[in-house]
Length: 334
Image (cartoon, rainbow, N blue to C red):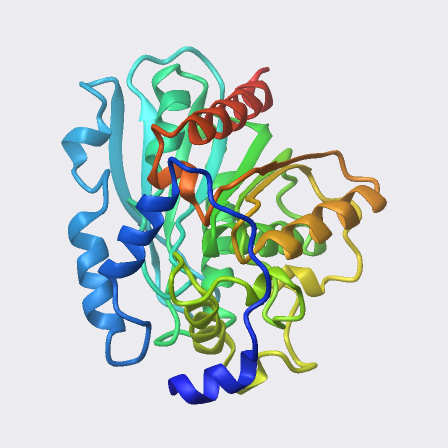
């Protein structure tokens, strides 16, 4: 989408809260690294992310030999190609473990199965979890419903093979970051509506939930920010095409559109106060509560989008990561 068209779509930038002092210079530096998202720049941005992503190396993922790293090709959605799964399991078997389906971030347009699994490694090392990360198809090459259907296929495979994986079928969690967080929420809705499998928890980390740009926060992060409103518009348009913002968008693609949020698993959901997804996250958490779902909601003052995972040494990031890690630890307990 040309800049002028996007600028006309958004209008004036809304007010943004200040960034945490430890995070502000990092966001400025990161925002200057990547060019604006477009069909022309996306291939190079994908290459740069793949080149610089932490956790891509299998040896690092083994955590000094404590984690078994495996990859498998398994059936994808009906009529679609097989999908690749990254499976991380503890070398030392301590009995039945929880299963965590991990969905990487990247706005549903970039990233891969080895991204965003490092924050789950402590639970594998402790022997309490098996992590299964899905290589789902990416838009715009594969628009909706391909990404969410691939994620659901990965969840079904994990549930059906729980015994082989050493997973307790009553402790099935789904976790996702950013675009993967939106896919986790959409996959949880699919699992509920298709009556398989039953999830015990969903971990939604700064999830991408709403394609409509109707909130204050969706318009407040301009070119100076990480994952600004133009990037978000490009990503949603890549996923949904001309349907973006219109009446014909599925709740599984944009979970904020779901009218019924009942019978969903216990939810951990977080956001930064200075990120573009803030308002849709706060609204989704409130509506989950109204539907009778147990929700742990955390908003971290001064945080930008996924700042706790990208600037993990900042004080606010350490607090956020420790809080989420403890929630997951309790969720995995027998």
